Length: 67
Image (cartoon, rainbow, N blue to C red):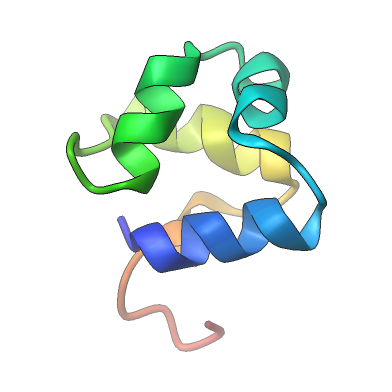
């Protein structure tokens, strides 16, 4: 996961980490650790974050040609 992309998408939508946690059904601690690179996102976590941000999971990944 590209933590900079996650942060960029979140900020573009004017969401705090707390807002993203609520929207995705994840804990604030999980969102924080994934965004800061402390924890890798499991596939289910990646899907929940992408859904909450209105993007496809591959858009949160490094090497995506659209980012």
